[in-house]
Image (cartoon, rainbow, N blue to C red; front, side, top):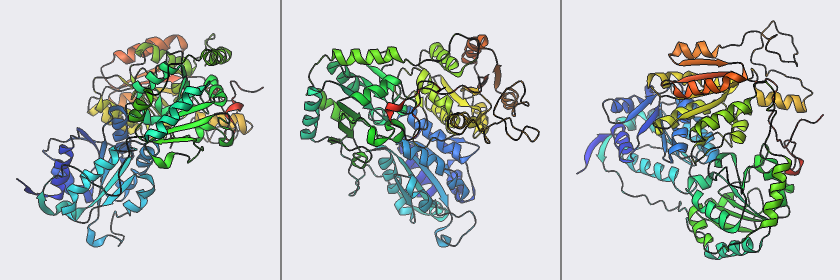
Length: 579
């Protein structure tokens, strides 16, 4: 039996029917009816300190659970503050829904207080968006929003709800299914294309599986492993596909691209077949596109037809769900031993393994991440901010399972990692969640420590503190004559106008003091400045039953290698600083 409800009540009831467990956001004037409906409801609403952080929390929740993340904000600045979060989710194909309040339909377009053209602003960074003008359309719109966000190639959806629609009353009946004539995701690959792809793989001598976020989104890691083992095919992953293939496999090439391994890049360039699965050939993976895998036939499996041949010309396109397609393809792929190919890759691994200077007393960031990986056995969920620490984490943290490495890939959003980690902890309360951050990125959303403390979210944060915007400083060192322009985070008016010899002993006191800052929130703050103290400090952090900030003062001018310079070919990979 249907029941009359306000639009605000319809929203809350619809979320409960979609089995939404937690919602992140902030209230405001044009969303007050919604927040009044939340009062006393069964919905677990987390009051964040910034709307951008709310969208990143919902994103981290989605990436770590596979469910759709949800946040609710008010109109105008509340909605525009989520744009970065929407763009982050859009670039990385994350199912996320933002519900935003809006001014009354009668004054839309009149520059009313806290009005913004939210659907216009977010059109380019959402999979789809809606402006609901009639309360009778609200339940259907919400159902469609969840369907669009979570099916096909996942992505963010925004639903803009004017305040009079929130107050409007109608019979509530939540649709059981969705039928959108213009949106029909194709999950089954064309049998003829799958057969052609299998034939090429069977004939190949130097194949490489190149896997992306789509493998994790479709839960296709078992199928990738099966084909890899069956046909002796090495596997390289994108940043976002970490954990989708076993690190300890002899067939693992780890990450490819700008900061990928030497052997992954060499293998891709020497391959005669590239089997791309749920990956989009972004520039950080391909390097100079015209020089990418020139010897290889390209097989591209992707649920999004628009992604195929968008960047790299594809020889055999297969449009469909990765898991479904790989299951069918596996039966057509022959058992084959590729001894010479695997031996060649083994030579590249020995020639230039991932390495750094381990035999001195300097506190290097790679060492810290290796210790985190070792002490957690790679089973913690790791969320990263963006920068050098992100690439070191990708290189040295051995994620044991899918959905345990959370990072902003396509947009490269500083300020993402900490709130995303909090969102992941809400979605996985029984798992260890560790945020690996740079001191620059962390300061962009560190106010969300309040959420961790007040909600007793036992999240751990490791700041690799080099007092610089590290990745930008590295580029300035390598390509701009070591002119460190506006990248020193300790710089004051009294500092020299030009300083290219960073030295903690000569620099002013760093602002903020992260230990005192953590303590001011009621969290535990720990500082490490000596290599010998790293392991005990990590153990203390992991044993703590409260939020922790571990501030590690690492080498200031440590750089990320390997590295392919921007615009260069993967063949031009640098394994160390020239000169």
